[in-house]
Amino acid sequence: MRLDLSHIQRWIAPHSRVLDLGCGDGEFLETLQRERQVNGTGIEIDEDNINAAIARGLNIIEQDMDGGLGNFPDQSFDTVVMAHALQAVHYPDRVLEEMLRIGRECIVTFPNFGHWRCRVHLGTRGRMPVSEFMPHSWYDTPNIHFCTVRDFEELCLQRDIRILSRDFVGNTDREPLLATTWPNLFATTAIYHITR
Amino acid sequence: MTSRQDSRSVGIVQPQVARFDDPLLLACGRELSGFELVYETYGQLNASKSNAILICHALSGHHHAAGYHSESERKPGWWDECIGPGKPIDTQRFFVVSVNNIGGCHGSTGPKSINPETGKAWGPDFPSLRARDWVHSQARLADRLGIDCWAAVIGGSLGGMQAMRWSLEYPDRLKHCVVIAAALKLSAQNLAFNELARQAIFSDPAFEDGNYIYNGTVPSQGLSLARMVGHITYLSDEAMANKFGRELRAGSFELGDEDNIEFQVQSYLRYQGSQFSSQFDANTYILMTRALDYFDLAREYENDPVKAFTHASCSFLVMSFSTDWRFAPARSREIVDALIAANRPVTYAEIQADEGHDAFLMPIPRYLNAFSAYMQRVGGDS
Image 1: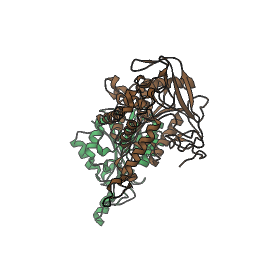
Image 2: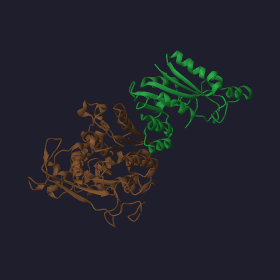
Image 3: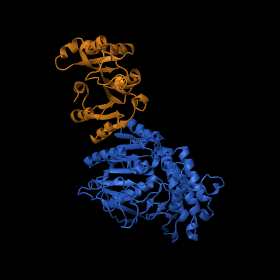
Image 4: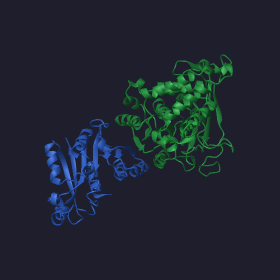
């Protein structure tokens, strides 16, 4: 499982109700159901992913987050998770607001565009970073709203979003300490546990 | 194209009849002193009787959902794409029961049956029916077959509505409910089309207020017209464009030749209408369209579908098709949203398909894949 997802697990209470926005093929939700016995629901738009998730026995709703999440009642889930999808939605701030409305707690992970490699790439080559982690070219990337760790925290401050905890994943195993000490420079992935 | 020798066909099947002599109190307040259900089964019931699937048919459907009645039958049952070995409703795994609804005209007690009180066919006097009457009659069949709990109740269109009604009437008797191309209730536009179909039948002089059955006449003109109207609503603009376009079947636009012009779509619709009118009973058509009109899942739950679904205890699969304008994806999303709000387990797939409402009968790869994947889960739970 992806590193950010294994970090998230500990923040999810056993037997709680979990909504996973952009759940992909459902691997994470399946793990949560198996190891935490959660009552899980996933949202996804990719049809192959949807079929894969159905085959895992998960409850999956085909729905485009950009069309809104108004069909989910207020505070109807214990935790709403969105892993690596914030940067791909049309209005990340609105989706965050919706997550906080639907869930008592939320967990968001996103790639940190402030990572030094991105800065070097942009700074020295003057071109948009393409790496193993961000493999798309600027014109065909689904990631249309990149942000940095600092950008995200600034948004939380502006919107009165309370950060319960944060965690950072560095580039390979060499940099975990650097990533937690100077996340905006060394974290490839940022993980936030937030609430209102 | 499958054939009866095909390893993915259930092969030759034989309808069966179950007779019930206890009275059935209907939602309209009237009672059937007894009734018969004609049904087919495919696959084997396991020892714990936990692998049974109930198929609910749509407006003009019947019990013959898969396989062939004889070597010479031209077409297999109406849902042969989805029922059979290795198909979504896999008969190697499940015991499938497909019933003709009461009020129907394919063998179950309906307007063509004899009313024991008069010794004559019921005709237009057959009691008005609701989806729940079908559900209750099918529960009796489940009792008869020793099935306490269906692994799944499955239906498309009106059959999907009936499946939802099952989930509320007998929450402990099904583990999964599969609702395809359905709605919580009909829209005004749906009601309007059904009224148009009924008026077509009423306006046929041969209909004689439904008494044609005693006079040896058949309102085939009216029934045919009703079917043509219905058929248009089952197809999408895209499907009709792909299938017929503006192709001519006869005539040409050459000077002086216009009289003979017939578009392919005209001839197709007339053929569908006349085929249908030779096989279907007009009184049944009126009865079934009314049952469809009166269906409103949440009416008795303060018109709140969320409240309604809190009475269900099964898991749901809901599917819709992008070009279905009879029961559009938005109608299915209403079902899904109510299930979410009621905290019921639900899976929803919105299938891109050009075929309109009829898509639920078609071999659309993504549809069959999603359906199969879900049925694996049903099998795991059974």
